[in-house]
Image (cartoon, rainbow, N blue to C red):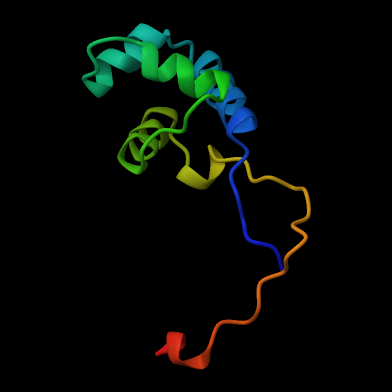
Amino acid sequence: MTYPTIDMEATGRRIKELRKQHHLKVEEIAEFMGFESEQAIYKWQRGESLPKIENLFALSRIFGIKVDDIIIEKTEEDESPLLPFPKTLYR
């Protein structure tokens, strides 16, 4: 089992794809989210940063999908597999 990580570039491409599918401009999303500029959204789309969880939630509402449908997981294998969690964590 490998530790799950987010592919920032693929997630950014997904955000851009969803925005275009919904015929939305970056400016419209920034305005809806209350941002003063569009820079954060451009950074998301380029894969330079990821939206905070509350912004991912807002994007999921804008696009009418689940947050999981926005995030793209890295598929490369990690060389250090995770050990099973101790049973005490399952309480």
